[in-house]
Image 1 (cartoon, rainbow, N blue to C red):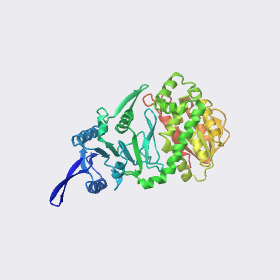
Image 2 (cartoon, one colour; image 1 turned 60 degrees about the vertical axis):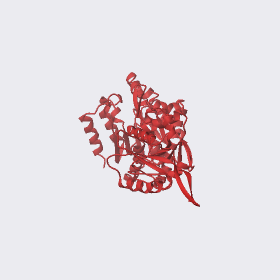
Image 3 (cartoon, helix red, strand yellow; image 1 turned 60 degrees about the horizontal axis):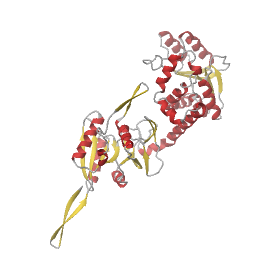
Image 4 (tube, one colour; image 1 turned 90 degrees about the horizontal axis):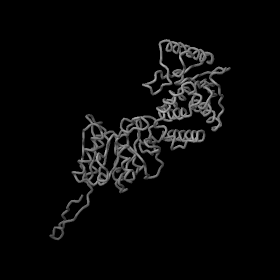
Length: 440
């Protein structure tokens, strides 16, 4: 940490101790490294070595948790004051390490963004035991966070004396019969919180993520879009809370195992499941707020671009109403059709709460109308075999002349995870194909 500087003054050699931080540069590398990363690293090393003692700590081990542990061990042997982890696909700009050091925090990270739209920032807050959501940079310099990737993170070395080895590990856990994995970065963040160590984030340290389609500056173009998604999630959670009485904290907790829980409940009461089950809406909302977010957004975009003359849309098998709500808010005349029951009532509740004008049809009653576009997403796989052909014919009758039908299916029970899904057959596929081919 210190080195001697000898100054000759009036014939006397005076020894001065200069404090010089020793920083371990943690690089978990793979066989191929992006040339842009190499160029960045050489430029930063030229700057950093003028101010600090830099110890490159390169490790090639796989998996990544083993590699990170090896790097910590090397940093300990070298007597480093700090360990600065940089992923080999993250670019650090001039002055950013200095900015992180300035805060003098136990653990401090910068910001970089995921590679795919909507390019979520990596800093996160924890909403349930194993569920994290992104934190949108808000202009403050430094904030506390619950979790983050380790692509640009500065850690004081004495922290590793407070955490039991292994410092980094992929952690498997079992809740309600379901095995899940917590990544090595979020598991490390959890260990820090367990010993009371704050994880800080300097939101001004914006790093570029190689392989992403955008730079940090361009990411801000998507900021308004990401904020709108977050508001939609919060609004939907509030609607669930008001309708079911389940608190947001318990909703997030239930989400972790909801698909398995719903599968078990279906097996116990398959006949009246869609009309009476009160957890199915949690599963539907979970799917729309996580796995189907991109799909839902893209559907609105596709209809606008490909079918500009569309006015009336039917959401057939509308579930919790997410697609119908989004299409209505985009300006379309929308109707929903589904089985009357608890899920149907929730969709009605949401529509009324938002002050939207959507027609509702009981899917088993006469629907005396026709539509420019009918969407039937993950619906036909729920239709019993003896009603399949009748359902196809109903869709045909509801389509206006020159109209379109958009269908997605998920036939098969996926090893029992979706016991409510019927199996496909050549006959079913042929009926669907004929229906789609009738589109102009």
